[in-house]
Length: 325
Image (cartoon, rainbow, N blue to C red):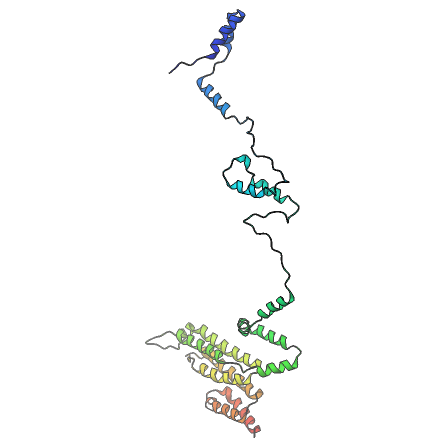
């Protein structure tokens, strides 16, 4: 490796030749501190990358606001090309200058944004055409009414009728008799659940206390449905529908199993008793023809011998038939 040159050794010699005092210069040379090679390298690096140096000059030219509108298109095209930095106009500066203007109509919108559209006033004829096109069709009305509950439908009809007696009479004439088919199907569903819940036993009986406990919940559900549905028709005053409901519900109750313990048959007896009371209200409050009364008596004749709760109904039917002569 080449020997390192020590620049400080030549200094005392030159100084001694000038002043003539070589001894003083030698003492000064010994007093000066020497740097190691590592320190010189570190010092050179610090000089190259010193943060205290003055920042580089910016080559961005100043922008003339007055000539910005005329040179906007040229600057936008130049910003996308690979031109030097001093010929480009920063986008952030342009946007800030554009937004600072007071006149919004003269401000050019970028290509990727569309200017705000002004709302046009629609004429009355166009409004009428739109309203005629958006009329509710019968299919839409039926679909919306089918999603409402019974109480909501009642409120709508009573609100429309209001204080208009003619409209109330028209609605009463259009009201059909209640459909009891879903009510009877509901009772049939609960009765089948009772029969499904009864456990099968090869050697014992299916009507003991153990079997009743297995299907007790279904028996209670059948009783509640039978009584509540009949009371609903009775409160509505639809006597023809209630008479038909009593006839069909009576057969559904008769197909329930008879349990060994009499206390377990209380739900079945309560259903028969409530149906007999409903049939009594039908005979009292309903207005039927002689033929219809005779049909009711034929239906009661084979059942009075087994159900004592129907005996008051026979006497009422005889009186009604006698009045019809």
